[in-house]
Length: 314
Image (cartoon, rainbow, N blue to C red; front, top):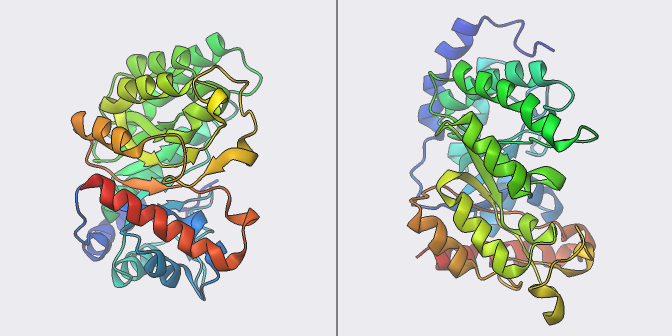
């Protein structure tokens, strides 16, 4: 991998401030939006029309390992491989009157930590020049025992933070899968990395999905709130007798996943917890049920979620 081999680092970075000025549209405290993955299923001609339709203020944008932006749909694919491409992305974002609040990367520190440190470092410098201040990353184990994975991943994460010390970008490990949703792993990683630029992408639904009782979900959100750099806002509507009990991981998620304004989690309480901790970042909708509903209903559901979160933030 060397997605920028044809462009010198100095030339690449020198072009970024101009792009940043185009993408730095003013946004309110706790701007509300959605993942770019939510836009394509809405049936609009391109991602910008979809973002406008649901009144998103910000977007989380997926970046692949070749610096492509595969879920931002337009006549010509987007990427971050050259200064000209970065400028085109920034221009179109600003023209659409939205802002990129975070880049999303499906990193694999368990199998290729050196790759991730190099790649995420490059992307962080691009993000910094564009005014993108958060990056959602994965820190998820597969077959490695938790104790071994915890010990092995701290070093690469510290190296990543150090290699990007000249940026304002913060890395948010999502509470994801069988690792990040477990406080026995999540909290020690935060403590051992020990940097204000390494924190959490808080997925509100994932703690609940993992099986934690509803009351404990709020406790966990309070615990990580000072470390939150970015969010995935989603909800689940479990039967009453399953809400405040320990459930198996992922129990009936596909059946009970719900929009943020229709599930068990009280987002007024969630947002209040985040605000009390000083969080000023985004409230980013992640709705994983769009593929199971009629296309004619999708935009209305996402727009309703975004409107609700705008109301909740005050």
